[in-house]
Length: 174
Image (cartoon, rainbow, N blue to C red):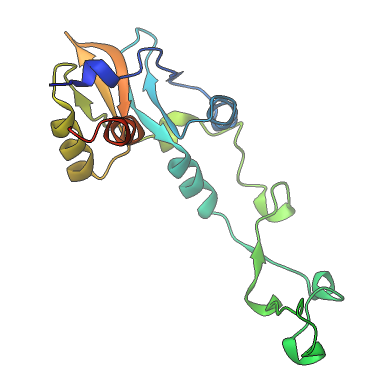
């Protein structure tokens, strides 16, 4: 029976406490991942931070209504040209746009905010010898996307819902 040890990623990308959210976003984008563990100076797990945490931070900022001028020449109703198969309708009054760097966002600084301020200060951990179906159940019950794999108190890997899906897709007997 396959275990977490068989599917976990051992090259764990992590950030340290005190890392700016700006640096976090760069790491997530460069590595193509959605979240990472947060470690203290001694390498102990202090939490987990994800793209969702960054979005929640940004969501506390106001939205900027899009200017009517933006829509001039773009938005048109189907009635404008009913015979045109490319006709489309845009509703400017219901549209908003988040504009990084706009004056409204002066309070949001990704350089001044650290991962410590937005992370989930709890890490969901599993043993490397846990069987894969137990890992799947753990992820579903916890409504989480990743579990940190810990052995003898040390971070040795990470297992994600995607890792479980890869196993299921490649081996229907699991």
